[in-house]
Length: 136
Image (tube, rainbow, N blue to C red):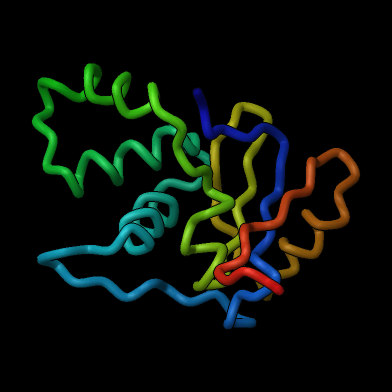
């Protein structure tokens, strides 16, 4: 199972509460999933795939030993995992994600010209992040 997208733009959720992307809050002792995803993607645009990001965040939060990472990664992806469409970055903090042809990811702020360019690109698959709340 993989969470990777290729040549895809994931825009922010329709119920995202911000119109300008914001850095997720973080605490040194217990960083949130959003903060860890942001930290990784902001520092390394187009370097990691969605699978890489999701597993790195899981491994850090679970304090996995480096010797077991390959085995733990196989176990992690043996079960279905939520993709970046469910990320708090796109649901709450105003960050879209662009996935290039190799599946590598970059954060795109909702208010940017880049968001508009990617939304208009006919060569990209367009996806929308999942809503935070259910509609009736």
